[in-house]
Image (cartoon, rainbow, N blue to C red; front, side, top):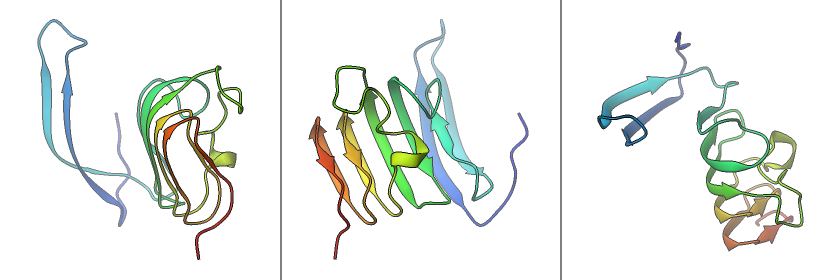
Length: 112
């Protein structure tokens, strides 16, 4: 996998038990600012995931399911607010600088 280098640098610790032996990685991952960093199957749709949208300065971690008001689309790029933060299950933070935590939490306005 080729990684692009830019000013965005993330320090990550990944431990995966999905393999017969645990895989551990410590270090820096540098990616282009217009490329999201994803731990999960896809940035859009349902599933367990962790996403850093560098271009928007936005962070997501948790689960997205179809059992929500947004039909599994709350973490798709068009529903992610600039400088927003959302963790939990089916959370939506679409406003600029907004934060959402918990279960089925929706924050659509911007912080002031």
